[in-house]
Image (cartoon, rainbow, N blue to C red; front, side, top):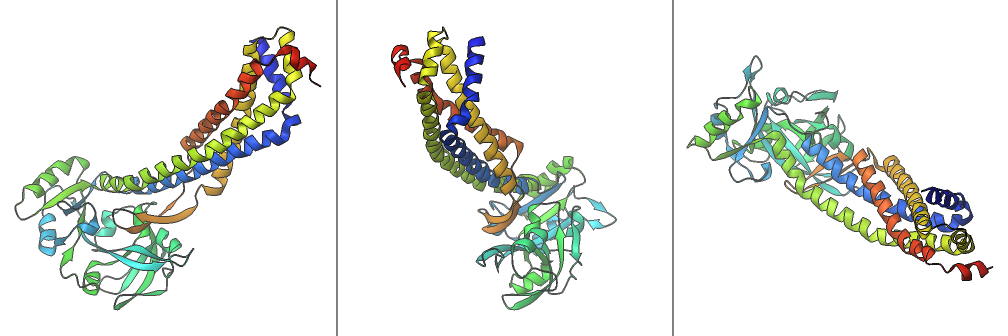
Length: 392
């Protein structure tokens, strides 16, 4: 151990002499870490928004077999029956269940000007009470029965035309934006809200909805509520926890992003590994006489191998830290939007560079350093002592 420590410290002290080749390894590994962490932070941010939506005591009712609100449909009479189910909270504010309509509107993105599918939700007056996290942050609440809308904070930041006071033309109607709302960072902040009855008329939907959002007396009321609805012959519906519904919608995109992220990082890591190999071969070549001298003085091959690997890992760790820091400063909190594959509408979210991702990046850097140092370390251990001592 004393030999290993002594040779390793000697190697590290001579790194400045090989600054060029060492920098190649550090920058290459840092680049891989930046890409890996940045791409995976997309999945983390999207998943956080989707899985952070909902409350344990809220449920969403849709047509049986529908995988999203876009493919669901409920008649007005069915919505009235759903609201009679036991387990729904009834308090001073009224029956805590809102029939809701979900349509897609076309608005340009602020960043690119390209058109995007933005979700527009028609709600009933009780909806803002059912969603207790709802609050107006700018302007005011729209008046029911009018062509007024409010925009989620994420939608207002990502899409043109949703500033308070603006008017937007959708179909045959003109809508006035009167407020901006937030819902504790949930997916609802990507939506535009208006009166469900007004939206039904504008889109010729008759007396139809696509879902019912209900607040239960308690999470324990779920089974009673679900069983009553599914046993009712007048209905053909499914009942899901709100949190479960939105979490399920995030799986397709997050899986795709992670596969792509690991694939890109894997390809880039090949270049970084070759950079590490080059750096360590250079280190062995420039220190051949020094290594041979140490071997002649009695230092073991294990000490030499370990010292070369330690230097490679040290350079990789430095690259991992630099890459992680760069990814955090450049991407953490960056606001964007992407398509939700379930509803084919946009979801606004922020990149999330978490501690787990930074740790994953550092581990990836160390693996690249280890692989890159193996062959040079083996060469150093097998270096002929006599011929190396004769080198100038």
